[in-house]
Image (tube, rainbow, N blue to C red; front, side, top):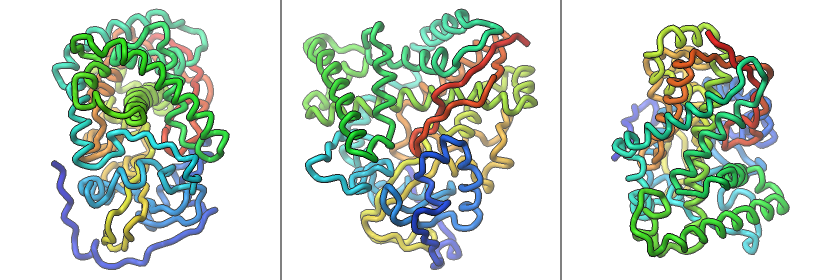
Length: 425
């Protein structure tokens, strides 16, 4: 179990909190700064001037910005004091927009639960991601990756996001759920709708999102009913059926589906796209990797750090407390900006640079920290590693043809499309 970090008297000394009313540059809940890829200097300024600060009257309500690694890890190490359940895990939490009670639809998921419920439900799905399961799935992942790469055109422009990143992760999700292969792109569609917190801004967006989530729930309920009396199998639905989760209500079922689909899709998909885009931005690092495939495992960690596929998680203070000299009131919401912590200059030298041989790349927080660390982290790392290994085996290089279209959101940090050409080196 994670424990809180010891803090010095200087760190605990009272500090004057910078409070800024939106609109303000430090209101980093704004989707456009990610769509336009201009978030880096904003967070850098906060880390230098006020790593812990407060925003009031944003589109998502009042919240604290937590922008460096040490306080984020401190908060994550105290899950009973800083709740995932009380206010939700994104800035679009339960109280963020004062959505009328009759319009609020809650879909509980174990990542947004506190102990003991979190522990009980996580324990059900965790065996799907053990080291032995990774060994069992490796050959399958390598075979599917090889098939996709062998069918890509060389010297012809195509969308890497659609033909590689989405296809590989969607196939993996279909295998994890034993989902009908011909319908696997439904998983991508549902993941995009589930993870898009911007849809909560309008009633129309909330209604359309809910419609698609009910479609997802209906489809999975049919699969559930078909497997209810079948023997236990390795897929995630079967693991739920043959556990205490068998009796969960419909909304909890849908919530956990959203968690597993978004978690299984976005981290891996956007890191695979970051591999293609990021190395093209640093050709000397790409050359270093091409000349030494032994750097692939470390490069996987560095890509995860550099991209950070989920920009933040939210926690809510259960009691009034001191946080590195700042008074956090009971009920205050804190945005833990993993995106910024992974560029923390006190930990990572030249953090905006992607360095394939970075010695401490593994210290990233892209998967979170503590009891809520991503349950599927090993699988994401395995899929990305195999992609890099199979690209190296074919001596294939990705050449980016134009700037990507990026996701416009403060939660999922990723790519909608990326036009590339392949060449051999």
